[in-house]
Each structure stands twice: as structure tokens, then as C-alpha cells.
Amino acid sequence: MPFTVCTWNINSVRLREGLVARLLEEEAPDILCLQECKSPVEKIPSFGALGYSHMIARGQKGYNGVAILSKTPIREVSALDHADLGHARHVSAQTEDGVVIHNYYVPAGGDVPDREVNEKFGQKLDYLTAMRDAFRAERPERSILVGDLNIAPREDDVWSHKQLLKVVSHTPVEVAQLGETQEAGAWVDVTRRNIPEGKLYSWWSYRAKDWDAADKGRRLDHIWASPDIAGAAHGSRVLRAARGWEKPSDHAPVFATFDL
Image (tube, rainbow, N blue to C red; front, top):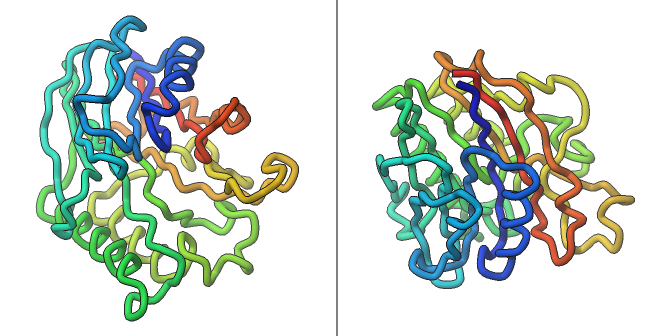
């Protein structure tokens, strides 16, 4: 049976409850993974009335937070604290068909790409290292990894490769670290498998007066799959229009459908 997965950094699920509801009503993904919920789990709004009566989440007051919403029953598999940061940045769940969904919110890394002067950048690299080591220790099978990974790896994942080489999210060290993490799990970037060519973004800064016209975006939000099911993925897309909704997140939802 085909099912559709959506990932979205919502930038406060309570503040943008209405936008989540709109997405669920208009797009109706089978599973919605949210990042940067910025809420304790008990205060995350319920979307049961829209058919999403199953949720697995990890939360923090005002920061981080990840949640998996599903139309059908899911069971929690893990909630990993990579690099021992004490942050709510990961949760995974298994569907009734045995597919494991990993939902990640990788640290943004601050403004300066130097761990000697910027602790947050060091935390980001350490987090990715811990992810890599976890996948090396246990190679994922029948698994999907989604989330705000806070790195735009390809030259066409950013509006200007040359101008962003020294900007956090596109520096060579981050791209290399993400590549090692992806390789460790033999993960397939299904978005780029389905959309192999051309500029593709999922994030546009709030700082732009007209984000759409400026179009200085980055592809920070990803959907990966383990090799055994990656070939079943199709229909990948970014819902760019959601970036233009009223009081939006600075991220747009990313979708993929799997025929499994």
C-alpha cells in the first residue's frame, strides 16, 4: 500500500497549530514529522479530529522538539540523545507494516563555522558524528529518515554555492560530515533521486523582505530511505506555497510517497 511521508520544521507547533491543520486537511499525508516544536509533549496540540490520533514525540519548553503524527497506529522505537546534548532532537517510530521512521532535528550550528570559537558549531559536528557511528553500528533496514538536517549538501541545494561556502549549513566540513553519516547507513536521498537536477530549496530566511522574489533558499530538510525500500519512493516534492502562508515557518514541507 502506498503511503506518503511529510517532514516540516514548524518553528513552534503551538504558534502554528492552524498551519499544521491546514497542511493535514489539504495534503493529508499518512505520516507528518515535525521539528522545532518548541513545546513540552503534553502541550503539543491534538490533531485527532483530523484523523491523526497517533503521536510519538519528544519535547522541550521553548526549544527543539520532534513529533511524529500518524493516521494509523505507530509504536515508539527510540529517542536518541546523540552527543549527549540533552536536547529533544530525535524520535523514531515503527508503522504497522514494519517501516521505521526516524525524525531528526540536527543542531543549526550557530553563525561561525569554527568549533574553537563557536560551541554550537562543535555540537553540530559532534551530533553528526554520533549519528554516523550509530548507523555504522546498526545498518538501517526498511527505514526512512526525515527531518531538518540543517545542511544543504549539493551545489544546487543553495542559491549560491560560491557565496555560501563559508556560511554555516553549506561549509565543506559540514557537507563532508553529512556525507559520512549518509554513507554509514547507506541512506538514499530520495528527494534528489526523484528530482535529480536543478535548484531545490526548503528554507528561506525571514530576513528577506520578499523571500519569493529574492529566492535565496537552501535545501535543509531531507527524506532519506534505506536501500531496500528507496526504490519504492516517488512523487517527491517541496510545498513551496506553504512558505507564503500567513505567519509561516521559514521552512516548507517536503513530501515523498512510498509504494510498499
